[in-house]
Image 1 (cartoon, rainbow, N blue to C red):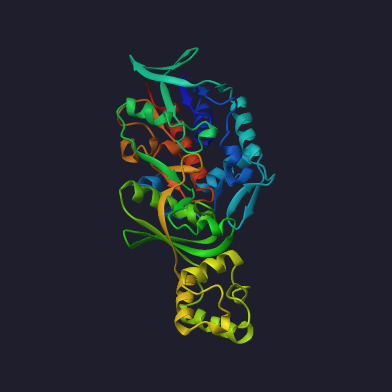
Image 2 (spheres, one colour):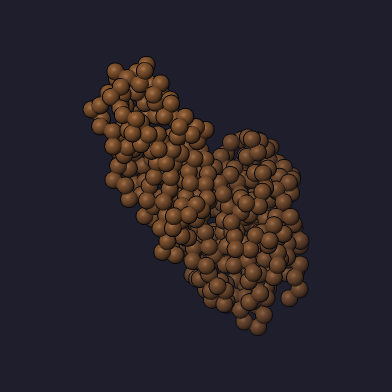
Length: 408
């Protein structure tokens, strides 16, 4: 019977352990936290958006998208849904975003734990792996109190993001020890810091906008949704979606700017006409009152200041040039990105072990026979919306199934 050791009891590790055990392997799972699935519990604000019906490949970012596609074809979104429904999960569909009907991420984590228990997987929590060696074809996994021996090892340790869930980047160290390259892991799905001092005035404001990232003056990517203004800069899902590109660009020494289009359905000229109409009907009011109904007062104030329109002026006193400048600000509200938020605030990382260092979608290392890698440890990061969990299920399943079948 093949002895499989899985290091990490998160989404990919639990899936890998279950897949291996279903193939008849004797599986031991080592988890440094006091319980498995800790990061699962905080996904989707505790509701666990565990996958998404829209599986467009653009939702997954990697230097080797062709391998991502092959993996997702081998264990797909629909297979993931079938897997969880077999465990007893009732799925709730919210515009393609799939959640447990209970509305609780704990349901997902507990169903995985119960299945692992049914399969007699040995789960050793509060167990931190210190060193992994391979001698005479056998892996020796050393912890503070024991040395576990196995025919194969699956690294599913997570990235450096969200260290409070136990993800401290140990997997990178283990992979490097066995000769793997590590693309520098950087925070992703996180907020960004901006240089503009008026950010503090905007703290707490939420506003729908199209968010466009420019790198060295050229358009890089864009997204749309509710932006959250903070004292340090910008947050919210559309900012999260583009943050991985900002992280990589800043690491390469490039400049990053974000422009918010606060009225994406209107042109500058159309907004100018709207503002002139407002002059007619509300021109006796202050500038911020004229913009009432368009934007929150804090945002209106900053827009006026950046457009060079005195806050003391009434709307009817605005010149054509001031109206034009204000309309341009509404369409191109810019921020200079100085850095992305750190690992503590990031949901995932961009970077990790390149997929071309694996034997295809078996998830086995080309460097060391019997070593498998899965989950966030690999150079794949998904958009918000269940894509990172889908990658965890896919890569974990493929690693576990392959590891159990491979001959010693």
